[in-house]
Length: 135
Image (cartoon, rainbow, N blue to C red):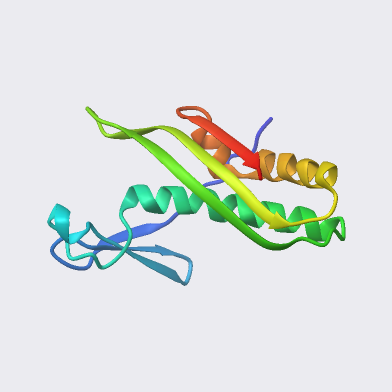
């Protein structure tokens, strides 16, 4: 049986088009670009969703590497979301992992572990075509 755990955040309006998200003691400002009527005070919600995927995956990848004493350096994630309209949503998300690593087979295993442990990836897979590839 799965235990139910709730994760809570708060989002408050902080300007005509901007909001501030709060998680524990951390804060992030979100806004629309000027071209879309905003003040460009922060990334848009969709951009934050893609960054959340990257942050979640990166956290799990680095933890898996550290637990196995695997030397992993200079990790970069390139994430692209394919937008559709009516209603606007991501139909696909592609993430490419670029890093300095020695053993490709070990890195592929770490990638699988990180993907399985990533809350955001597991959630997105239910509604978008999510591809994670190692460069």
